[in-house]
Image (tube, rainbow, N blue to C red; front, side, top):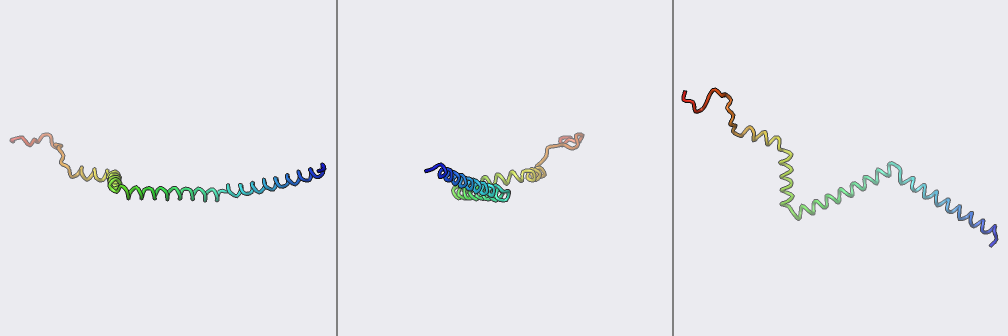
Length: 107
């Protein structure tokens, strides 16, 4: 093959490589747009959440007593202040509001 033929082949390969690079760059540009990144992130979060919910449901079916106990503990934790106020009002207090008056005083 002559030098001119090899040159023409090299130019053709360079042009093909250039077109391939431009095509790859355009594909990458389309993939990193904010809308596409948001869509990919949203899809990933939804997939992980659905997997987590499926795992939690399977675990709940296998161990219902444990899930019930955990739910009760969470409920008590969330309502601890109202419950403390309720039991505080219902409880008997051993405070003497008038120190001058004693229950054992005969007078």
